[in-house]
Image 1 (cartoon, rainbow, N blue to C red):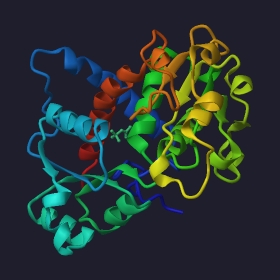
Image 2: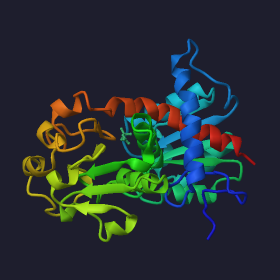
Image 3: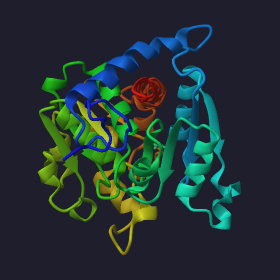
Length: 317
Ligand code: CP
């Protein structure tokens, strides 16, 4: 079946999800991002690759990191950037999302970066946009957050370049996490041999092992000898019913403390996509400790988003 993110020639047209993307495209994005890391060191932090193009950020859900780094990335590529304020837009008067997109396309927007609480929102928009317009999914419901998955594997590759010899543990609320899904697809596609998920049964999707991961319910067992510990936020806003006893109880069993981290390899890195709940999924001492690469993840997000947008713009019809 044809992947709607790809052109007939197999080039990236939209970035909607990591699932189904070939390893060659993931490596193209990561290698292109590598070439953009140095742009931040220049006096003029700009390259002209998207001069004359207009990128429209539309975030129907709150964001600090993703929205800001997409804006910085587009500006570093010399694009014009519009941040639509959804709260003051005509969405509040009943305009449909597709009418909003059509109106912005009439203003010659070339690329839409979309965050939405509904899974599939970016796919829907990609199905309806004009052929020259590109769509990037900046997080849809619990489904997918492809640029976060890519920046996470970029960070892992930076600190642990031998991806074919790694153990990665993803810990916490996998059930509600679009980031976990994107990371699992990226890591398995890139050939990481052992991806573990560590969580209580109530916070794991049914049949999660079909994604190619090893399942652990005991954190101490799951962390043993891993190279990367990826903590996830407890997504209380997406929980229904009593999925957990309490956040204090969760921290006791699944929160990352230095004592638990010491079960991983001595040079293991600690990651978190943010926003973090200190004292719920991660202890402050670990979040700010010398094994933490949580802030470098954010910095690398700019280069990765520059890579995605410049590749899409280069594949325009
Ligand atoms: N990681 C992430 O998506 O963070 P924001 O919600 O702040 O964009």
